[in-house]
Image 1: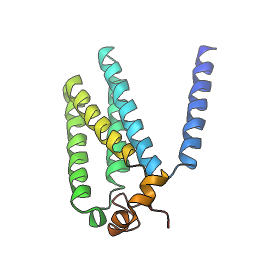
Image 2 (image 1 turned 45 degrees about the horizontal axis):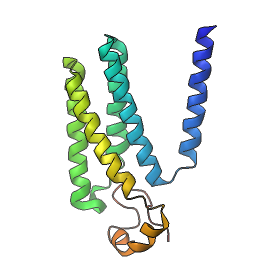
Image 3 (image 1 turned 45 degrees about the vertical axis):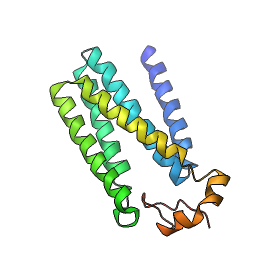
Length: 158
C-alpha cells in the first residue's frame, strides 16, 4: 500500500512539472532547468550522507544531463558572444566536477557546483524579460544580441 502512495505522489509531481513546463516562457524554462539540477544535487548530497551509492549516482547523472543537455545545449555561442562562451565553459567545468564528485564520493564538490548553479540561477532570474519594465527598458540591448538571445530562444517579444 505504501508503494502505491509513493507512485501517486510521484505522478502528481510529474503532472505539476509538465504543467509548469508547458506554459513556461523560454526564460522560465531555463530557471526550471537550474531548479532541476539544484534539486538533483541536493538529493545527491542526501544520498551521500545515507550511503546510497545508486541514488547518489543517479542524482548526479541527472544533474549532469540537465547541465549538458539542457543549459549548455541551449546556449547560442554565436549570438551570445563572450557571455555565452563563458557559460559554456563553466557548464563544461561543472559537468567534469560532478563526474569527479561521483567517482570520489566527494560531497564538497557537489556543494561547490550546486552553489555555482544557485548563483547563476539567481542572476538569470533577476533579468526576467517577462517583467514589463525590463522588457521595455532595454529592447535595443536585447535585440542587438538578436531576437533569439544567447540561449537560442526568442526572449524578446516584438
